[in-house]
Length: 333
Image (cartoon, rainbow, N blue to C red; front, side):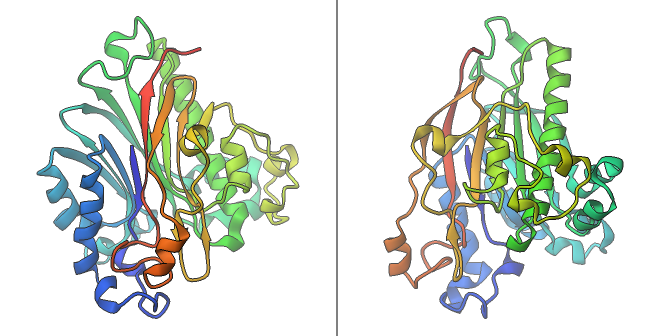
């Protein structure tokens, strides 16, 4: 499982990222090195964020398709309001998988502001107003192993599936309440999908949730995904009113673990910019159905600082570093 925010061309601002030489910040240079980083690890599943629609079409999809991958892509919701030329520059999430290993059973897009609107009575108008202008999404694919790679139950047989969720949460550190509520909307949707699957198939559904959550390990987002209750007066709500959610607090029935925390600890950082260094990217999994065996080692701060002082640089071509984990199936406890 490989996860990487690749830094969309439209966000690679030479003025803001003035530590990086202009030639190394150019997309024509970065794209090939990003591709090499992906294929070097030969991952079975790849989840990328900040992929622009046109770059997927003209570069990543052809290159990875020729190497045996199939994919699904979803841009941020604003693309629906744009003309054909403008929407090509909108970034989104794309999930690749090896064709020889998996077949696609189903796909779904979760739009957080749309999901929030369906819960208007519970969230309240103040909270809705905070969420409506943020068009982040999650891309979900249900994959079926073509070989008995994933054993969920001794009698699972043809019902073996893997649910992969790829997301990119709102970025602004001043809007921690929006991030938290986007993740709450996400886990509510995932709880519903998991429950529906179990009712229909008679067995639980293993899930991987990964992406750029734009939230640190000490955040309420991490607390929520870890299965801990988040009180309605948590500082990450920024004293905003989210109706029933801030009255009762937040929780989830999903049994998730962070792959890095399970194997060792979260890396010292996954994002290293000019004014921020920290962990924003994660691979979560259902720990009663999957196990994390290995994770990709991080990069030392000394290494980054020795090359121009921050990311991106001529050798590491995004402001994020890739993360990866080896996940295996196991019998439910």
